[in-house]
Image 1 (cartoon, rainbow, N blue to C red):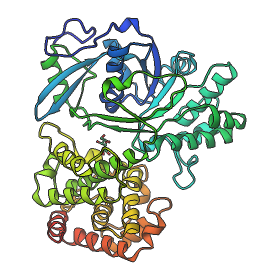
Image 2 (image 1 turned 180 degrees about the horizontal axis):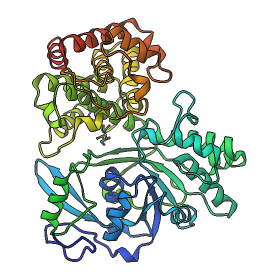
Image 3 (image 1 turned 45 degrees about the vertical axis):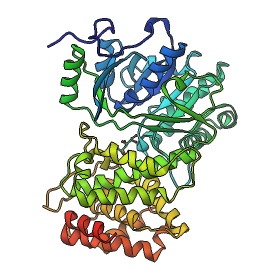
Image 4 (image 1 turned 135 degrees about the vertical axis):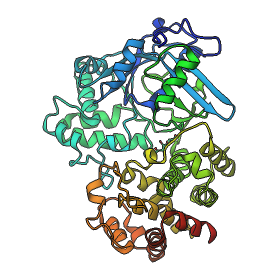
Length: 489
Ligand code: CS2
């Protein structure tokens, strides 16, 4: 076993490393959700910003529950390797922007202090769609969400995102410290305003005096984030060791492509993320819609259809001629629901996505993307389906995607093997009987509150299209349903 990665000094020539002295830069960001995506994305942009323009902008990474990230990173002084994998090759880069890695459960005091510190000017978030506890119907808190329910009960000892940050904003205000900017980096539509709505509602229920402060003084810039980052495997760690000559328990792998579009609203300042290629714009919404509908929507479709057709990785779905046709069809249909975006060629974007999905060096599991469908389908599939309906454009691609997801919620493959849905609504989504009809499944899921928009369910064309696909998927299996759908279009 090689020596553990603890300093950027003794790395082989081909490995990029922080182009700045880490100890010269203090921390200015607390990031919540210390997973692979943060390490592949915001941490890399911040590394570029520190190298280009300096500043006290290193990141204190926090995971809310799992102590694993801090156990991996702390012995490495926060250093970790990103392995970029593309058709052009495999490149390792050691990232230095993390100043510390903490876990709320085990380092509670240190986390609370970091959130209240005047030096902390940004709190960024990647806690996944389900991490927030947003009631999509009201935009406020979902009182059934475990962390929301617990924190509403005991707001002085918060453990969830809303509870923790509203508490910290209250503390800062009482101490006369300017609020931090809240930077949501999850794949939610209009993510900044969405999180503001959540925090405002949480404050209304726990600390009403804080409501106008949050509404008036706290910035919640919206963002579009993008970098395909598969879950780490033993192969990732092996590759990291081979490339860097060091054992790295915190290494991750990702594609070479990355994109970040951010609303430029940072009253307390921000790192020079432009240096890493981030695009600052006034209105992020069109970029978010483009990415959520084209990349993520297609991802969800190919994940459900692909998983059930026996394809383990995204790259395998692109090697299945029928499914590849459906993937391209979905990209086109999703693009047709968007307004023109100055400077963006949607055909070229679609083509680039197809190439990214086909990346032969990325082992991105369809089962990983299939997770949390109830949190993803509304913005990825149902919103563009409604828009297509409104514009009189084809809805069949979205109906196919919806049917594939509904088929997936049965928790059984065509061969009869069972699998966990890994969805916070797992118990509600699944029907009791194993051989439920397409009609019964569609009726049941359409009836669950806050999931399928009513305007969509009321459309006869939509119902008919979903039923046709779902029926075929149940009767003939996913492989045949893919074949059939890809031939008729
Ligand atoms: C994926 C995303 O797992 C998923 O739901 O669609 O994680 C996707 O890989 C990223 O958004 C890419 O930026």
